[in-house]
View (cartoon, rainbow, N blue to C red):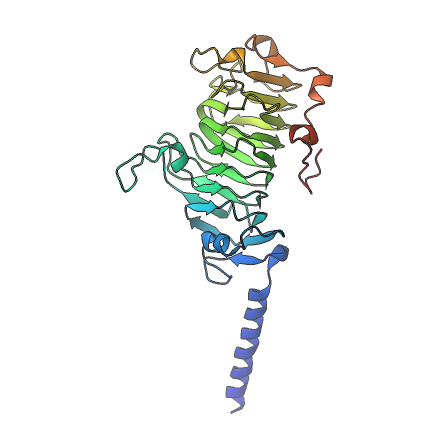
Length: 327
């Protein structure tokens, strides 16, 4: 009887301990996603669906380590949502669609359709998360398409090949801090205004780092500050950017440019005349890929006074992401 009682007590204590672990929600999370069932949901999309529409307060979703193969959608009604991963290298959101892949009707998905994650809700934030398109080198294959305004990514990874990161929203302001972004051709592209601080940009084979399509009436496009642009590609195989549309704007400030960057620096997209409207500039870059005297004549080397206008407040028209330590 004593032995049975001891076993029962041990079981009860174990259950209490387990329930205590289960009840703990790191980072004041509202929901926990865990593949092993020790959370509120086993899938990320289920957690997104549980967020009240147009909630005024922030909803925090903590995602435990695991590879979550899901094609995700954060609708416009899901505002102020935060994803926090357990470990950036182990918390992976991935899918494997690509542009030429056929849908159920035999039609090609296209670049947008290939996206692993669609972010439409305003105020989205992510930290310690890997966003991936695992289709491989099969043409356009987007890891994440971001349309929501005032989005923030801190210590995140964006993995793919061609067209990895699609900054799609025309009026979207996006901030990337301490992120890793890799790809081949045009792997950072789109209409949005985006600032990249202290990011690592990995040029994998050969191609173009950016393909901005900045709207004509936007004062800023892509701004890279204190970033490290290098990678696995051979020397002189990458352009800093090419204009997907007229009026593309891209600026690199105080960045390290590896040997992968071509001396010309910039392309005008297959011999078009977009160089007449694009604005491509640099300020105090360094490294073997920084050869200002060999850059295309239509690019710019900024003065100190010109470079000072690239603050978050100015670039984002008054919005400064909180808790980033940047200005």
